[in-house]
Image (cartoon, rainbow, N blue to C red):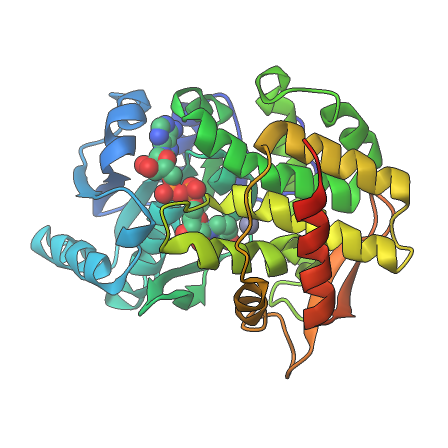
Length: 350
Ligand SMILES: NC(=O)c1ccc[n+]([C@@H]2O[C@H](COP(=O)([O-])OP(=O)(O)OC[C@H]3O[C@@H](n4cnc5c(N)ncnc54)[C@H](O)[C@@H]3O)[C@@H](O)[C@H]2O)c1
Ligand SMILES: [Zn+2]
């Protein structure tokens, strides 16, 4: 599969087992442990080659609610019970939750053991797979505790997506749309004419991973360029948090999809996008994600946006496309403008 500019440890393949065996054989590991969640154990673990050398399995419950310190304790305890020493290898087979948590556990167990990530959701393949961010949620704060640490290998095989639910696939696809809008007008012109089921993941996954890798390599610690990846996320995260404890909970990508429309509207106000570009963006996103009823109380959504980690002081800073295929970051917006942007979304007809 074609992907350019990837860090050497990131492998996109349709021969996952061969690549895994090759990476493992490079070092003399004392023990292999595979970390799965309750779903990836059933859907993904059987796809690991029976030739994988003897290994133990640690299974965690599936879901974001598990991405916490209590689950880390269980993983560290099981590693301890298995007598895993500093030469052990942890292979994390799962989406972003096992990836972030498992990587964090490995990076801290006995001051750090090697780990391999095998991301199995679209979101984890195109987003969490590069950039070295690991961590857990803490007391309601998302990704509050964590480290930057690269795995010895990240092995991405789009065939894992075959068992993923449509809802999860569509959620991860929001990041793919984001990557196209920020970096590649030609690819945007291709995808915006396609339905989810018509997309070729062996093309889209490498395309998206290459873009994310380029950005994170240029700015590993998020001091500038990497902030562009926040497009759609200032307003999207606020909506995701708002709906978290309601019956209308949104998947991450569903919230980001709304955020991308609202933030594109702000870009239009600054002449960074044309009316036609905004129309294309809103039409495509709504055709895929439908229209969500927003809360009447928009000020509480805005107060959540004020807590965004990317803000500086009391300024609300967003990243948006500057013409489809290009981008700006640290664009200042205001509480009033975010409310207007949400009103714009609300007024759209499907
Ligand atoms: N580290 C980063 O840079 C980064 C980037 C983006 C997101 N994240 C994190 O990733 C997490 C979300 O990731 P996610 O959406 O992958 O969540 P997830 O790991 O919870 O996976 C979503 C669901 O799909 C199931 N699943 C996974 N792979 C499957 C497969 N192949 N077939 C069937 N079911 C499968 C899981 O069990 C789970 O129920 C969040 O915690 C987010 O903070 C991290
Ligand atoms: Zn995201």
